[in-house]
Image (cartoon, rainbow, N blue to C red; front, side, top):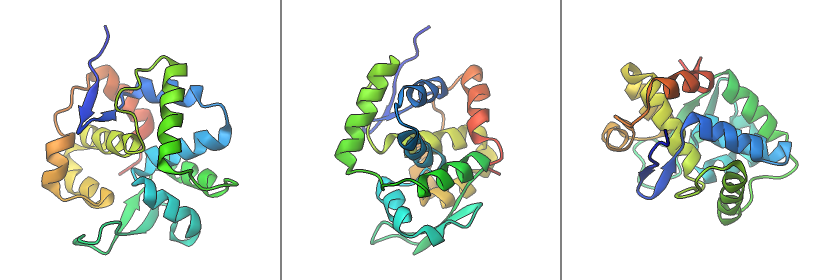
Length: 183
């Protein structure tokens, strides 16, 4: 059965099997590290670019992230990481180069998706962030406020976008590999 695409504000939210397919299609280990760091942190693209230049903000199980928005209620937040997230960030920070301009990353995502046989509709640098938050909201619904704080959102924004998405039991079993240990 082919699943219907999940699009929120024209940004794609991926199913776990699609993430796996895209990772397998990424040709260079360093690019895989960057993709996984974006996914497992749920960071905004510019935030991960900032982290590359401020490696001391990576504290092992957390990243101390300054607000990316001028009108933010909190001037910093703690981005929670599981074991996969810690590994991904460590590898990303060892990369020779920072993330490219977001337009280049968007083109890479589309190319990798096409190579993997994944529909590229709505793929962009925001995809990994929206995917991660939706997976966390699906897997840890009782910890919704912790998810919001880690992602730098207020609860109503997250509820509007990430609650009640059409993930089935198979998707949830696959998500567990990625999200286990986040709490």
